[in-house]
Image (cartoon, rainbow, N blue to C red; front, side, top):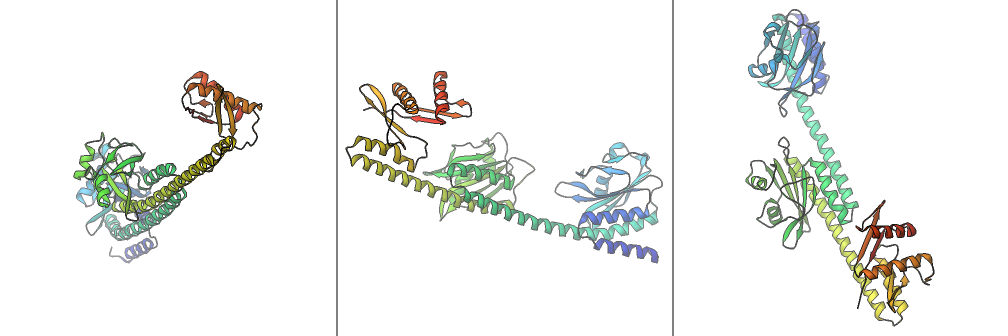
Length: 459
């Protein structure tokens, strides 16, 4: 543009672009600026998404709509401008509907014009002009190109800014997630509750199809917990060093990130009905001792794990190893408490000849380590089974209806000569025999209990 008015317009346009930081608002300014030059036309501004290989609409002015989820890279005139990388103009009569299938046009148009957005020969996007009367003149196109060139620099800066911002937000999000996961892990000390939590949290964090948790068992690794379905491995499977990816990670203690063409992953896929596209594995190590291995698998061919995902898994593995260590310490403490209780009961039994004192010790002291509502013991005397002691009861009254009911139930169990374990969940009784279910239904209703375990003993 050689005239002062044109120069003034371009300057104002460039200044307005600098007033925004993101690509969307800058695309809006470009579309409005071109619309001022071409009143009555529809102006659409696209930026190229290289990951999706699609044109993403960033701004539009006029009576034309476009699918904002993305347009295939090679679609119609957009595909042509991507190949030619020059201004292209098509008359409506020379186009088939497939050439502009991405446009929802409700009226006749005269031409489509495409202007590539180039920054040092790199294709950033495209401006699409839908003309409903006369196509743009050469003079107008010259101004539009100058505006597009200025916008290309602005778009390049905006994309860098958005990339850095998104990376920063992603890092903050990951740190927050890692902090939350560590809190959840450390708040869960029960091993059977902790194992599924570890797998499910890792699966959500990295978007994996499957998460396998392998734990050291004697001289090898055993798969003890799984989130998702994995046809290549199931709970109870084992691996030794040299027996696969997990075994090797357990042996050398190094994390791995594998993609579809890696030999080790190809070997794993031979055992699977579906092909894994990406896999990560990290050792669980506490105080230089291997606890297990976390294996994370993607079966989605369009989703591959990145180095950032591997870094995240490594951090989670450290937290998981600590949580598993804490849980194992709790289990060890409980075993010690159980042994101490057994020793105490044994000492109580052997320190007296008072039968009632012995029976009271048997029904009461295990409650220190085993949670239960009631324990009772019955003895056979003169071919009759009679309740002799009940936990929490110092003076036994056999005429009490609850005691009489328990006495009858224990007498019946003694006749079976086998261990009986029956539970109730809502209205369901676990036993398979109808008569047994009915018997325990009445018993549970009367006592308010929901589980019954009885172990007969004979000399």
